[in-house]
Amino acid sequence: MDILATVLGTGGFLWTLAFFILAIGIIVFVHEYGHYIVGRWSGIHAEVFSLGFGPVLVNRTDARGTRWQIAAIPLGGYVKFKGDSDAASGKDLGAMSGLSDSEKRHTMHGAPLWARSATVAAGPIFNFILAIAVYWGLILWSGVATERPIVGSVASLPGAAQPLQPGDEILALNGSETPSLESYLQLARDLPAMAQVEYRILRGGDEMVVQGAHPMPPLVGSVQLKSAAIAAGLEEGDVILAANGQPVTAFAELPPIVEGLAGAPVPLTVWRADRSDTGQSFDLTITPNRRDLPKAEGGFETRWLIGLTGGLIFSPEVRRPGLFEALSLAGQNAWFAGTTSLSGLWHVVTGAISSCNISGPIGMAQVMGQAATQGLEYYITMLAVMSLGIGLINLFPIPVLDGGHLVFHAYEAVFRRPPPDGALKVLMTIGLAIVLGFMAYALTNDVTCP
Image 1 (cartoon, rainbow, N blue to C red):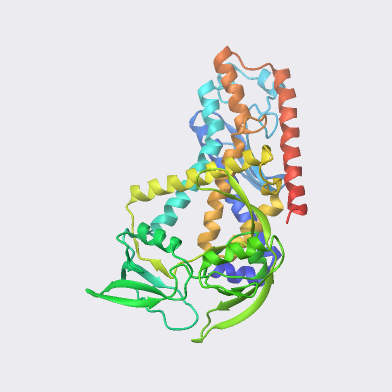
Image 2: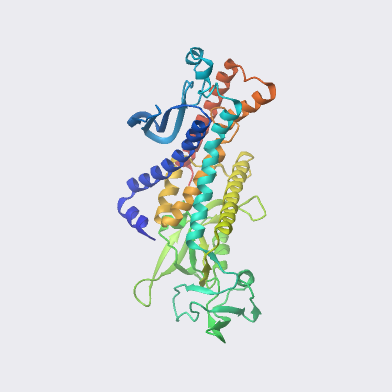
């Protein structure tokens, strides 16, 4: 938790809306600036750069003759280039007919094919760059876990004092060697639930054996957005003592209990650390949601979930990665997030998973508002995910979207002439209908889906 959580706790809906508008404003600005700056570099003049649609709230015209404006509806934006008839870059036939050849060179429709294609593609590409830059910065800021299982910080748990200390290296877990963090995590996942586990550790140059809690206790590592858990007020660091009346000693015991109730409410006993040495326990009842989860090998599985991920008895020690290592990891994160999003959309289209996985502006606002309650890092991470999603959607081959314009450019490259103006108008109308229909469908999901 940090300042964002405090602010949202006092502001409710208005702050949620503010953080959503901030996120969408950043993403749209980066997207449209990509179009604008690459168009300018390519010799195409931008007449209007708009954040938002509808009535103009403020505007200013710069020395190059571009009007920069903020409009009232903050759900997108556009760059209107010279020769465009509208925000979707339709051709203004009347304006184009009155221009000389040299003047047409500075329009979107009279510039060389390479310039137009680069300008169109730049919007989504800048969204991808933003996402990778965010991941890169977060990795450089937070670091990456060391290769060996060395204790960085110790979780707060109820009961006896935690035997592990920062700086301890875990040499073995219940007698099994743990030469790497990966091997330690694998052993921890495979370890049956038990109240006490033997840790052989290296501390200050001395080996010793201590008894501690399960390496993956029923500790809340994170609370998922738009979940039953976040609605119930569960927080990172909470410990689940019992579920449906059954004592829980390892996080792995929790999912089968939830699944076994098949959507029925789950009574939980929860322990939460506070300023006292003992913390406090409380009871609550939480109703699981049916959710579709991506699998490591690809595809999705549908399960009953309350929206928690487990934490470790300790957080591993971290190191500062080099710039190029961090950039490589950032690219991997972006690739995983992008491919998972596309896979999810494909599974929705084919009916393999629920269409409720598609959210509209209300759902996106909820996600960004809840992300802010989890802290600045979580909020920025979701901003990166949203930027990736908007970049990918804009590459879909639908007229009015960037991907549709690139298809038209590909047609022109193959046939040595642009598509007929009449056909373009029809296709743009169809594309607009598809986009508006999709937005209406997503907005319906926001209202009807749990």
